Length: 201
Image (cartoon, rainbow, N blue to C red; front, side, top):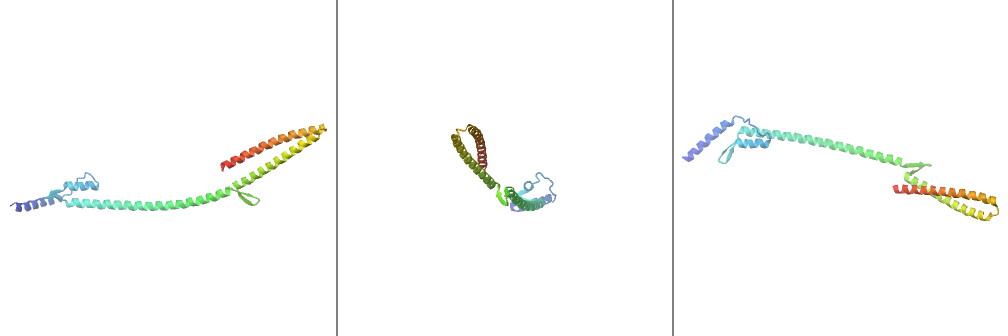
């Protein structure tokens, strides 16, 4: 008897459930796919451990899944297109930067170049040559001054009998000393400047 009643009751429940499923469900709690899935499960009846799913709900859920996938694919295509455009822009900008760096390097080379008598020198080489000449001339001048002082000293020693010459010699010596001090200060100033230039390098 129970075996006969069970199929009848099952058929009755299935037909009742099918009639109830013909009406589309308008209840929407969570519009996300997960929310729709949970709603579909909650609205489904359970029979012998199996879920009886409303075909209309299943169709609506499947349509929403397809729409979501289509939207995601469109967004992915748009993002991929934007990434490609940005990569092209980056490549173009890198090319522009490379050209500007090359132009800047060429301009810096021209700025750092000095032409003297048709011969090109870098500023550092030119400064080295100029300061070497200045130091050489200063050294030669110092030698000349030292030798002159020696000769003046000898002349003063020999001209003790001539007061007038001695007086002129004294005046000359005073001037020579002043000039020597002045040149020594200038030489020291030039050496200080040279040291400053070397320290800046």
